[in-house]
Image (cartoon, rainbow, N blue to C red; front, side, top):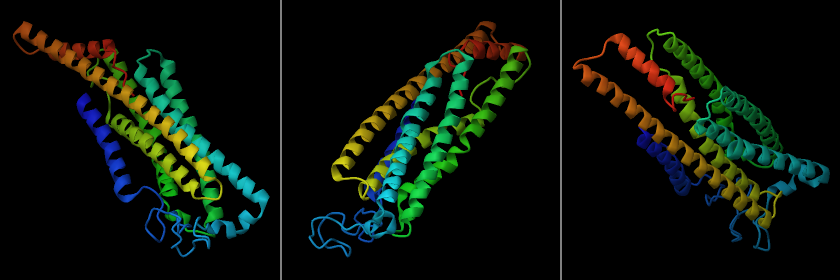
Length: 308
């Protein structure tokens, strides 16, 4: 089980990385060289239709718009862009992965689940605000360029829509889990408290969103690097800083996920062996009540019984 979980997570990351390398998860312009929609000569070769006369730097049609001819409006757009980038990055690089890791620390305290749930909801609210800023920026730019053809805003909106269902699946799973736990403690027949179907959706959707959120942050930095908001040196520093932090958090998250799944698989194996030993000692199958009692006892005593 743990090996399959690890393989699936790594395969997802590898698939995304391969698609990025092959097709370019970056903006593409009319020349197909990975330029953003508003730059035809992003490589500085001077052969683009909107290239500058000196051939050394690309022309940016944004600078021709009224938004950028007004210093006050330009400064406002710059502040909103920075706020959008910082808030969205905090959500998908720090907050969401950290709150997911929190559940893997096996801290037996109900407050942990509440911190996880309310923290994720609060993070989503922050992301809604960040997405709203991004939509505002796109609306300012769409008069000068077809920015909605860029993958960054498309993926950002897709993440926004998918993340809406995360707390719903989580709440449904937790409700089913609690009902099963109550029945087990009261001795009533029920399935053991474990991952439910909504729980599996919540788990894998969350993992997918973390990966996509981190990738989209890099796409956003790449998109901004072609805009008039950043110099080349600022863009390089932003890419390096984001790449280091995002890679560190992803590896840390991956480590906790793999470790947790291994422990969970071992615990399940021990429970199965325990039931098999009971059957072998009695030279026959246990009764229904004995089976339920065994399941209930193992669910209550297992260190990995709580899986949200």
